[in-house]
Each structure stands twice: as structure tokens, then as C-alpha cells.
Amino acid sequence: MRHLDPVHILKDHELKHTRQRVRVLEEIAMDTAAISQPELEKKLGKEIDRVTLYRILNIYEDKGILHRVMDSNGTANYAICSSACTSGHHHDEHVHFNCNNCHKIYCLEVMVPAIKMPAGFSSDSLSLTAYGICDKCKVK
Ligand SMILES: [Zn+2]
Ligand SMILES: [Zn+2]
Ligand SMILES: [Zn+2]
Image (cartoon, rainbow, N blue to C red; front, side, top):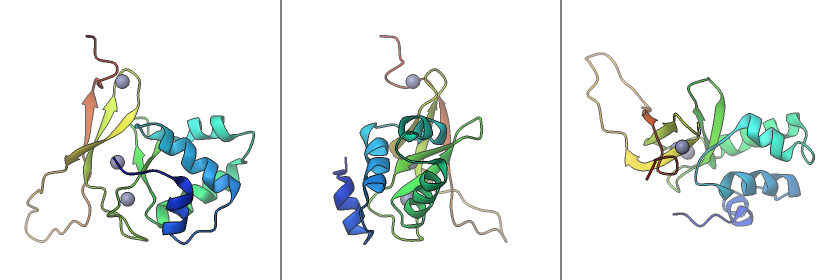
């Protein structure tokens, strides 16, 4: 697991740290699962208006700090990137897991297997989402 200190992350990516930027990262780094945009809006609504939140998320995505994962409803979820991600170049080719019970999305430490493309097709990114029951919802 990566050390997730918002102030460090901002410094590493040469971003000025503002209270609002730190708050957004804090919320996202708090959970091991990704967080959906509506959930972020609900949690930070009192401190950060929608437009500012949207702008911060875009900067983080551009900088290789966060990656966006769409859930089965088409809602954007955000998760912290691996250290391999840099500005404009994401390398988040891990499997995502969408729980059918709690609807959370997890970044798994399982790489998406390489797939041989047909002649004439070249892909530059590949994503794979598994659906099922997560370890927290599993009945013991
Ligand atoms: Zn990334
Ligand atoms: Zn679950
Ligand atoms: Zn992920």
C-alpha cells in the first residue's frame, strides 16, 4: 500500500497545496475503495462548491494522481493512482471490482491480462471490471 499523505502527493506533483485540494485527497485516500462523485459532493459540499470540486478532480486526473472508474450506473468514481502514473500518462491497468451489494469499486492488485488484438487494431489502454461480492460483504 502506498503512503498516502495528501501534502506529500501535492508536493510530488508540484501542485500548490490549498486547504480544498488537501481535503479532496483526504476523502479519497481515507477508504480502500474508490469514491463516487456524488458521494464526494455530499461529504465536501459544505466546504467546496461543485465547480471547484470538479476542477480539482480534473487537475488530479491530468496529473496522474487519481484515475476515474465508471460504475455500472455510469457514475464516475475516483481512486488514487499507482506511483507509475505521471502527468498525462496513466498506468492503471489493474482489475476493478464492483460489488453488487455495497456498490463500491475496489482497485485490485491484479493486473489486466494482455490481450492479443486482431490485425489492424492497436489499443493503448485496457480496462477490466469484475462484478460480484466484496470481502466486506461476503457472509462468513
Ligand atoms: Zn493513474
Ligand atoms: Zn461490498
Ligand atoms: Zn483503480
